[in-house]
Image 1 (cartoon, rainbow, N blue to C red):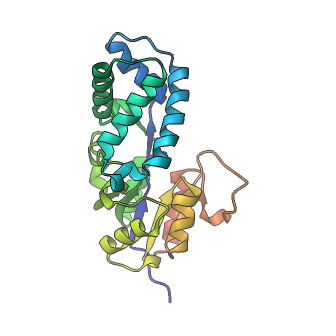
Image 2: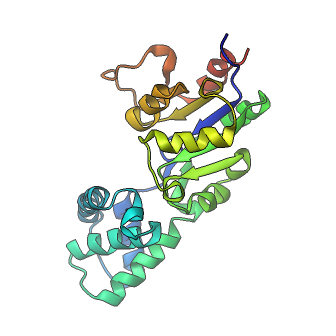
Length: 240
């Protein structure tokens, strides 16, 4: 006999909220305040390259190499702007510091229209909610300014956990906090490997949120969500 559902775990970025404008636009806006004129398209391209390099060289914010989220992101900003011709060290440091703190502001994030309603519906069904996110330690502040923090009983970020999805270890930490077996837990996220495959491999009821549908993925229809509006009825099927 299967255990009834008790908890719902959530990914955050691109599941509940997204960056409001492109990284290039946001970096250029801050650089402009310092008297620099840069191209958002050029900055976006440099950022993608630098972000990939840092993710490969210093995975999960470089925790194991003695870095943390703040020093990691400051490095990404400095190297991105250096590639775009900004060389003055003090200027790079100032822009990097400002941008790190800017991303704690609600102005930089957009909550999806279906997010709050879905969280409220889950709570009203008597389900407890937690977060499992490959995010740095700013996540609590960001969820707070976006009006979402109060829905969650706990947050686990990969920076705090010292391990990132798709490692099962971060989900194990979440299951310990839930205090129930994996089949009493659901997980909602937008990433096929990090969210869907990993949670399913552990016996968690993983659902893949596809705001932009991808028919190439091998996911049964009953595990797919095109919107969070579909979630409560799916969860109710596992509650009895």
